[in-house]
Image 1: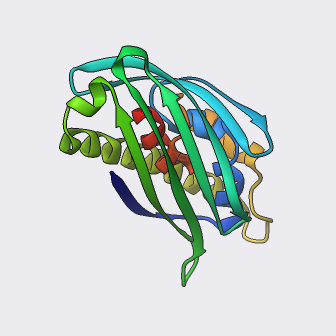
Image 2: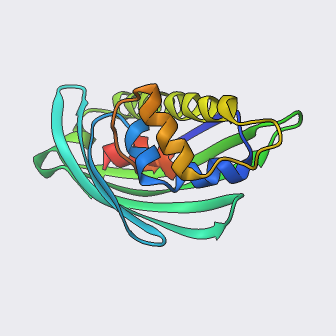
Image 3: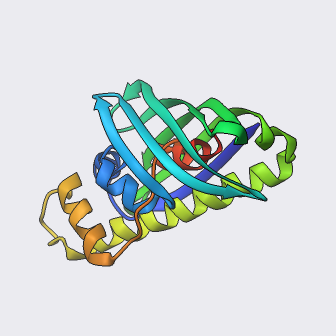
Length: 195
């Protein structure tokens, strides 16, 4: 299954890259996140509770970044298990491009394979759930980045991931997880949950 998306972010590609690689930011924006940690410079592991149609489960998995061209793009490879609910694995290619007039366009193309009960539910339901999760993640992600940009002074440098994480705490955003995200997060996020 292929899932694509494009989202406008109110910050520079550098600030978006820092945020998309910060576990505190990802956890705050990804719905249902129970755990998320960076296990190396390019790898994450996490656990998320999710409901997809009639199936509720906890999904545990990993995500690895490859083909890194900081701060422009990377490929995210993921795999995860949801017990009897099934499994998912795949990849997402994420790009960050400066927009004319300011901000960043984040786009992704994700390929995923699923098995178990998830595969029996039908591609339409799975794709709809993944897209809704990605939209939820990126909506929160963009709101957090907008809050950070608003609080920055006009001549200030791009906000660092730590400042973005603080803005998340101030905004009261709910904790969630990465992945699959879509990934990084959104793609990673949506796809991670389907793993």
